[in-house]
Length: 392
Length: 242
Image (cartoon, rainbow over all chains, first blue to last red; front, top):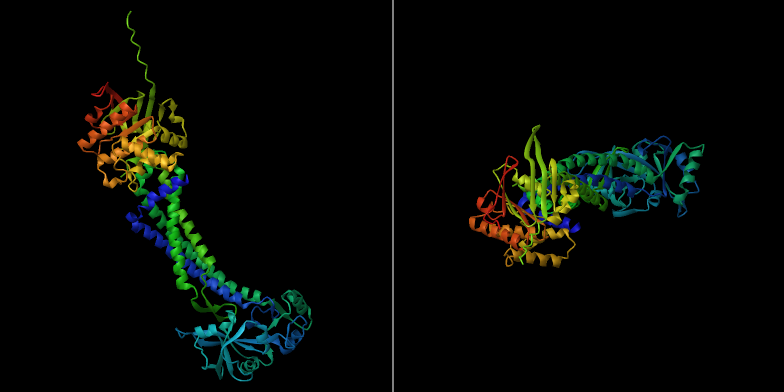
């Protein structure tokens, strides 16, 4: 059986040069489908990866009860003191690794377009560095507490009009950028950081904060930590793991992008299926008499059907592989920034064309090939042999 | 003492069609192609079927070869009633029992002569070497032992038809069905092909049923049947009648 399938397949593949136009139309049709779909989905993958890199399961976030984001939250200094005293918090150099932070949004022009974008500006405390273990200073120096100085994430440097040494207007004051930092590729790299105390006065926040970031001694103590804070009658807080917070933040974008990818992919795939059907119908029609001859001399229907399916799948696979390769070259690592709808601020991230997406693209092209080959294959073996033998 | 001449042994029957009707539906109308056709062909006969276009001779050939089924009646080939076989059984039966020779040769353009001839053996369990050996012998029989590696496009029409005949012979079928085998050939090539068919019939004992328009081609057969409007209207002997 296999030998028959391969033999018939070989007859057909050797005629590819004679029907190159229709073959290339189908192959490039599928190339386009896979390229666009992998490209669109790589946005979601990249965004998800950035959000995932932002989370540390041993880091807890505390917001005001009822707040879903830092923007909507508010904590008093008294609240932050009570929280800092919890015994589950990791001690670094004799100090609890717990930082009370502020989160505001400022307008800055985007690189390239010059249009305004909402860029997050975070007020941090010295303990913030201890909480964020992936923090790394790349260029310049730390800001000096009490001064209008900023350090900026490397993602922000790439996407917005900010760079080391430059001064920017924030509220009524000018602030100087004194350093550039990395934070493991996470969402913090889209932010700018300054001293929480300076930001409080610049934005007239009094002695309040918006969130607390806490590094726990052990990630396994999170559940107990959470329930104890929630049960504390002095506090009205919401406690969550940082990983869960960012997973939730990425949900809207990834759902949107995945749905968009699915819609675009389905529409384009429908076109590609027609193209594949057309190619295989042409192939089968051109070989109608050959196929009928094979059937007359005793070849069964199954190897004939299989050979047509294998051919259309091979052509589709070629298209899929080319599409995946082009998508990888064009999109993988392409950096951009988009709105995080939860925080109303920009998140910079890189498109991610990973092995999973490429495998999905190849799988998708295989399905298109199979569907595209099925109708012509069935048609080829259902037409009366006697009639087909006399066809031109 | 008087010499006793032995009675000639009756030849067995290779083909028996009994009351065969064949009709097609077209545009809601039934078109009768063959009507109440009965026919017996002894083993080893070379039968020519003649008749004008549309007389039903090709349809008759298709029914004998199991490429089509009768609307009524029975087709028995070498004792096997083929109209009761399932589609897959019929395909297997064809591979074992029938050799087809087509007007336009129907060779695979991407295969050389040797591989075209060996093609039906792909359906057997023979080794590659054995298939090749048999294909070489078959091409030798048709006089193309020196053209094994040639592709159809490099062969003349007569040579292509001889490759087609070698392909039909390769499985040693009981019956050869030839549909206008000389219809696409010049006179000299047609003569070569007909001579070859006669040799296969006479020397190898192959039963041959040949559809033809050409009275000269029909003369090579041992019996000629004339069809018109789906009926056998006349039977005649031929120059080749023993």
